Image 1 (tube, rainbow, N blue to C red):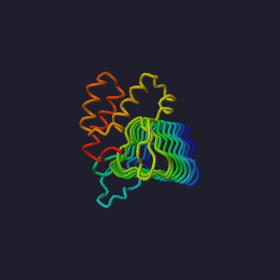
Image 2: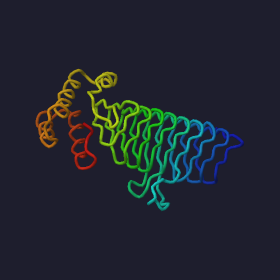
Image 3: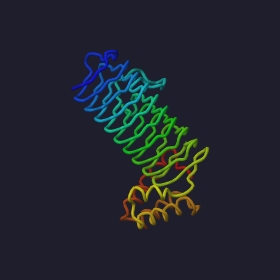
Image 4: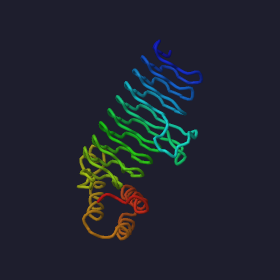
Length: 259
């Protein structure tokens, strides 16, 4: 059974699966699909071509799927796609994509705290935490298990690597490599996110290898091309170092990495 409050407005064409709960004064547009057991608490507005998965909790005054703030956007039929089991807290705004990626996408098991802004063409992976008032500009990518501290803006086209952690009130204008701990305005990598890796079940050997890679990247003073060569030759069979290598290889062609 679906539970829809009498004050909610559900436009004809919207698809609500079993167990969906729609609270007072919510508005759901005609091109919206909401998966099983997802809850909209109150005053939630969802519009555009938007797909929301199962067992999400969307708190009061959230806005999802509205048109991009990019002045080049001309109302192309772009999408907003949200996965399963996310908690999206009060006053979060998530905008649809543009004709760059054609979608804004959020994965599974994420926590978006109050006042987070997710701009057009952003990709957020799985099991990420975006603390209060994190602002993701257009085309940003946040990889799995990343944590971004409150009041942190992320510059357009930047990437925040998997298992990284960024301190509150930082300012990210270059890519944050996977596994690293960064902070500051502008954000700089300070050390390895060792405690976070332990909590996520990384072995001591894995952490040791990542630490050696960290020292090579951030303490050796070598050019990034030489660092990439050493990472590739010295850790050929290490999946975590390969993730670092692949991340940096893309970064040096775009925003560069925060060091």
